[in-house]
Length: 254
Image (cartoon, rainbow, N blue to C red; front, side, top):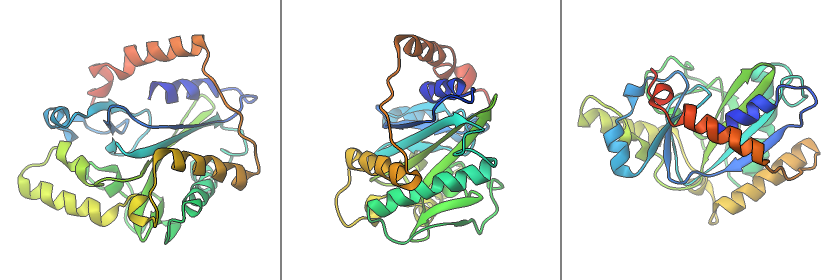
């Protein structure tokens, strides 16, 4: 998360090139949305599962980052990719995300307005809460994305579950009783899915990352140039990690 925020701060000038970043999480981590209550998570249960806890610089609800491809895009708000505001830029980027799913031969994919009321849910799980527009497979949410804008720069990042039990996040969240937890498990399974559940062939992180790069190249007719963090970049990121993302003042602030 420190890297994503750092790249956001670097994108605040109009001549900055957009950066597409693809990554995974080790160890697995449960991330909370910027404005989410910390009481939604049970730290003891998360620790028992071997999952760390972090707070994202973007909104939304809790996400368990495990067995997934995570993407982030940072760019200046005047770049054509981010032009038109949050909804317009999200729908533009979504075309590449849909192309990514088509390359992987994921069936039944769609980008459509949510039929539920966005952000009025008290549910703590991101993949259970509807957004204004959702990318779905077979009617279930398959990509969860969020966007932040600061000082003329834009960050959009998102979680794409590759495999595993999509409902296991419930095991580290707070519920009033076992019945409520069981109901939450079923709701997540009814509402969300993974790439592997919708694929006819085995998938891994490398194959998915290659498909994502190809999707952006073909959708926007661009070239991708490898980007390497410099030593000064790494020092700034390490400081941001230590002073913000590793602290209870940030993670448990609400």
